[in-house]
Image 1: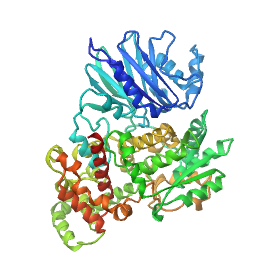
Image 2: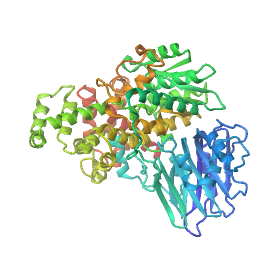
Image 3: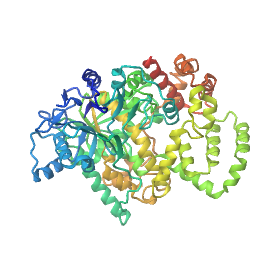
Image 4: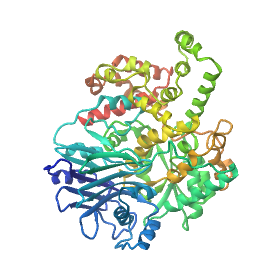
Length: 632
């Protein structure tokens, strides 16, 4: 796990700026505190930089790594979990190795397979390979998007880095903010790839490669679950057996490490399963780590402790309080752009404390998206059933009247906002668009009350660009409704929100996070399953629960899902009341001209009076305000 950066001349006669590359490298030093390196290609058309966090082959895995001719260089961030198997396969074909690192295996594989090397990798990665003789660059990002990669083209050169802020702070000129990205941020809570908050910078999308050669710059997606034709097992029992085998293989690969390793344990189905499998496979006692909250409804540490006791792990518990919001400035600085998943705050603290004990931590990320754990999947299904039972024409002609009636009838009710939003979504005829509305925090009503100036002008239609993309992805996927909504979340929410959240929080503290449930073979398996094997009695993850029952008594995990969330609502109405109340008068927000202060004031008032929970929207404003302050 590391930080990578580089520069390549795209235009003939352009000169890469080595000084700038060195400044970029210094800005990503936190991602790799153990070593650094820089290589300038013989032609001087390209240069690569690396910051290393040593996890495998501590003695000889330094980067940039070069082929024997020193004309091909590679920098790599991540882990190739199947590197031993790939190494054996390459050695049988005559490849010679000087180190024990997965980086050298990747270099040799690239030499042997070219761009198609990505198809053989089982792991998390962002890497760059420069072939000086061919004058060709390959940038690649893993299938799920666990490792980040940003790039920009300036002065005829393409600069890339593991972090956005390193590119921005080394730039010669001030970058323009992209208002479409701001709309995406307010709508989703994050900015989806390939956009960033700046017009001139892009994220490489998950499962995508970028190449530079004589033909110019091009990108190509090399992996997509939309039309994956993996067959489902013959029976549920066979599926449970196969999933158990897949998870054991995925965990075994991720237990490969030359440094201390532990497991994040929340006590939920996903993390408990990972901890149980890891405990069974590990020769030594496994260390587990949990974080709790001062609000009982959000605290699951007692469940985690019971699982840890049953498994016999060496358990550690940390606690988050409202002053956790004091970490927001540091978090925003590391993201480099507005980001409003509030669970990044406890993830930050969990990573900081866990790093005092281990260098690598396994996590349960991916279970909800792959195995239908989220409540909104059931909500989408209920909305679909209602709209099938009642003719659409009824909603088309009466939804506005009904909304007006509810506005009066439910005035002052805590449920008013949810009921009215549900009615509005029932009035959306197109199923993909309805799901996009369900996954959005900013709809037409919020645009009217909150947006102003340029931000309102760039908002396209009822959904905006980001919502339209959700709907388009839904349409592009084969299969039933449940498969489609999970595919959309994997391509967007998982890749562009949850993966950056974990990467930024862990790498800020030099901790490597590994997620067995995000193994791409596990994901392919999950999306092959019929709905009845995933949802049972209104609860998701039916098949995961069946596998977990082989490792733990059901009494340790059979309970309603809570999720890893922060008690923002109570914090905002309590100890953070003054901070939230100051948002309508925020000078950084006012100076943008993007928002109506009256609309923000209405959000605050409704939240503090308990009329509607606006926690997410208010946190988005707090995160955006902090980013604007830091940008100056």
